[in-house]
Image (cartoon, rainbow, N blue to C red; front, top):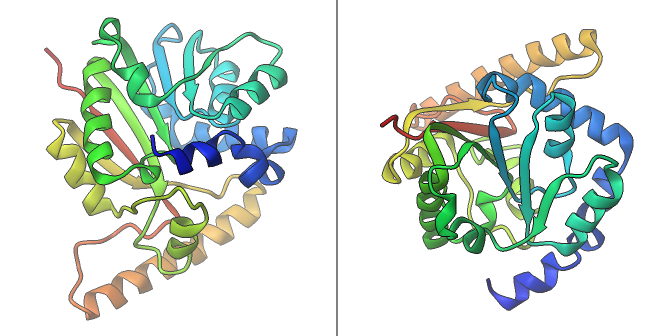
Length: 248
């Protein structure tokens, strides 16, 4: 990894997002979000092996523990993040400070994991790194295993710029089309791209927000079509890719 990135990642919480995400309420909010958007795509078997690449401050780990998953592993390049997880969770978790490619490159991991979680990480990689990492994830997935990869949606004209440039380590952005393109190129099948549902709090407010959001999304599609772009249909803040390794 480039040295300047290491300088950022060594103190990632301090330098970036600690104030926004380091409180008990945030863990509960993220758990609701993951339950609504991710749970249906995760293995039903709570003994399934789940790997999270870039586990951050442990929001998805917290969700996994709450849902009863027993074989979670998380890795992150930030020692500060991992120390925070170990301090925050009373339950001992398998979390490690490690480079993604070093971890994925270990020979014994081939065909091991039933699900790989890749939340808000792919945008931090260069294009050559993206291809290499997706190839390696495919290798460590068990046959029929699923990759869940979330990233900011560059098709949304209101928040895409902020999503792309909110973090100096971001290298690239995706729409539903480019995400599908790179996943197909690296061998994944049954690819599905969705816009994530962020309306998870007060039920009445959520319903009203969804209605307004639906109207805005239709208007954005109309504007895109007027400029000759009809291939994009997802305008939510983030996109979630669901992609599978082929069965043997």
